[in-house]
Image (cartoon, rainbow, N blue to C red; front, side, top):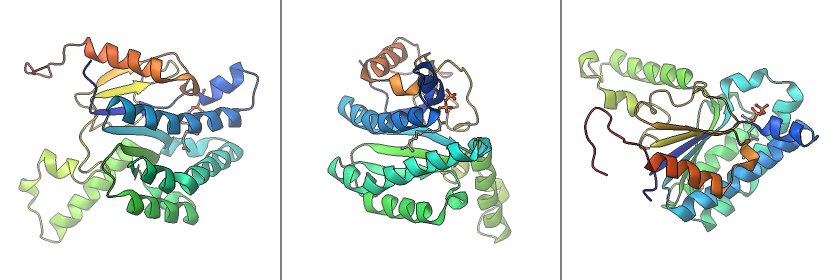
Length: 235
Ligand code: FPP
């Protein structure tokens, strides 16, 4: 079995998982956040190098205040123990997205977590927070335009690599496999630039029920595809 180097997941279905069990949505998110931690260990165990999750989108602010506050407090808890857990597992944590809209204490914890885990060489874990791919591309274009304005870059020297290096995912290889849980089959403004050649896998399982067995099914499906992207690739 060929294990993808980079797996990205759109976590969906926390709410539906809870509803199906007659529980409040908040419990779905709690279970969903626990599953993110479990999945990091599973990814590492099976040899995945990069794992990226869509935890909170720029559109998720439109959810009821109580739900947003609940998700932020899960994030707070995650970050509280994040450095210790990451260092124990040699895991590097990075956040994608515009964190300036998050509460100040969260921004500080994020900066601290990224710094404290930067040298870890095991699983490279990315969490997208207040992330939207179009917003990420807009921010990248602004950065590039500023360089052109300052005379540090010629407009005609802008390459695809210039753009990749200006995204939040700078230095991170593109995902090989994108998984979306809970039945929807769309990209929802996630890693639009980075998923140009990515294989997609959709499952009806809600995120809290997505376990190692489900992950192996997704990888098995990935293995059964003919990945050509315009040229014949070596397998
Ligand atoms: C997906 O289910 C949930 C989200 C996109 C937001 C919350 C994500 C988490 C709690 C996991 C993040 C991890 C940490 C560590 C904070 P949904 O609410 O969209 O489900 P539904 O479509 O069934 O309503």
